[in-house]
Image 1 (cartoon, rainbow, N blue to C red):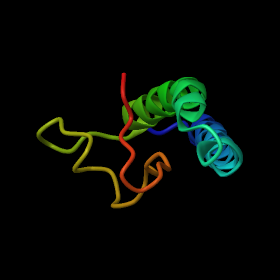
Image 2: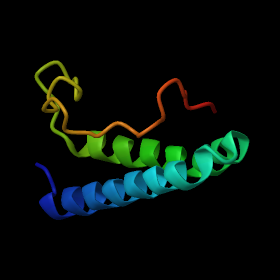
Image 3: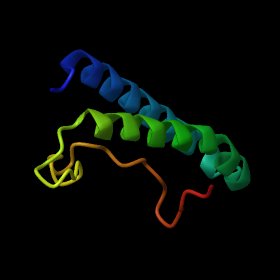
Length: 88
């Protein structure tokens, strides 16, 4: 059973982090790509953690697979500039 309150809170948190990353990209990327890469790491890590939390909240299908049980587009992808790849 999905805890709707926890789900909504986690989705709001994810939205805030995505907006913050967008703002960082808009204000820093063009001026200093290396600084952006450094500063965006913590945002990308937090996005990954929040997405994992969301996936854990979703019910699994009969095979135990949570991804196929998630509606398409249910989990927003991190916003990265074209050609940029998250590096760990």
